[in-house]
Length: 100
Figure 1 (tube, helix red, strand yellow):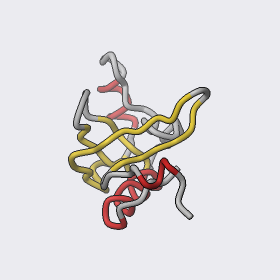
Figure 2 (spheres, rainbow, N blue to C red):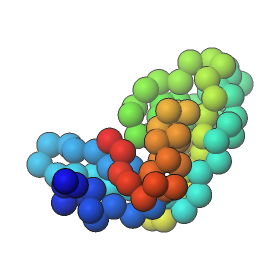
Figure 3 (cartoon, rainbow, N blue to C red):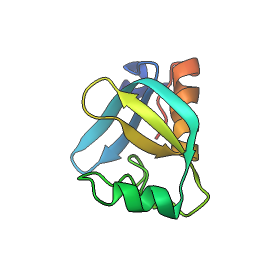
Figure 4 (tube, rainbow, N blue to C red):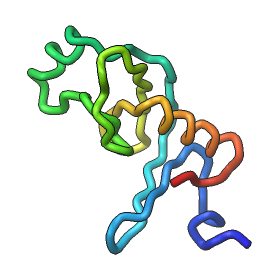
């Protein structure tokens, strides 16, 4: 039997339980293998307010050579995801389920 969170799931979303609430982000598009993390990318983005040096969803820091995915949110700025989180979101979009 599905939980209330799974029943209310919309395609292309990631959901996780955080203290006292459930966080759900809906993406309009996700581009996997968008860019590879490098020292040059890190140096350029370090001057920005949002350096994009870690996955937006799981907060895993990117190592040099890691593939990053760019995700376009329905509300808010674009974000980068690690390959694993991007895959979860794309699977959720095709299956109509929510992955934690």
